[in-house]
Length: 254
Image 1 (tube, one colour):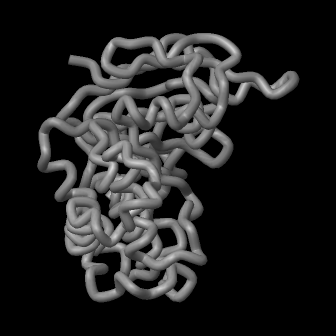
Image 2: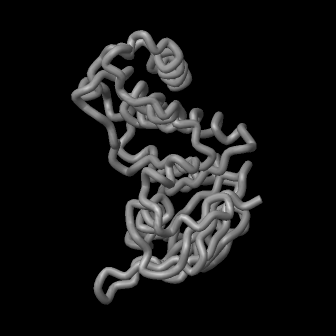
Image 3: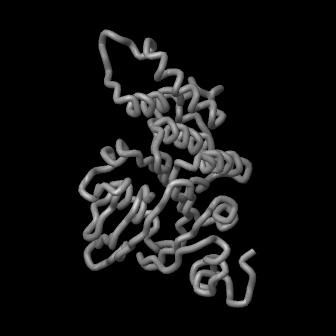
């Protein structure tokens, strides 16, 4: 069953076509890596699917429902979770408060003057559980601004997990992370992948990361879908090695 699908998805900025008629379907239990050179349209494609941008043509479907005209919050309520190249957090709030807000949104709970947040033990417990999964339980009281970049990335994953989405979209999750921080985040994504009910999309430049996680690779170039298949097949294709991975024909991608 298709969880997320694009049909002829296109966006134009003036005379430039950033995403050009991309049709692709994604299914539960599969992690799809989206690769291609800088400017290929990968993040723009993500933004169209998640609702940050409005398509010029084509459509986006979640669970078979056309959501092309819905904004990002409404797509999120339909089960789509999105991470960004740059962390998208509330830096003045604590680590716990950031995740609590995500849990609150998931529960559909609004502020009640007669019932302080501390009384909502269910929401607090869910927030603590999400922090524990990413190894940040001990930093719950810390302000987000005091976290390292790697810990901020982990917090963003905790917030996404707290929303309990069926579709998880990661846009270069390891960008800017130190060598020591990367394995922790990759382990988190690998853990999410073990839940076969989840659909995971990953934009990533590091091919070692792609090879370790992906069940499928699609390649964008000049906004068009030019390759789609199993990682070994796509990585080995001459057009991908030469044009997108910078590997001369006849050389190994390893």
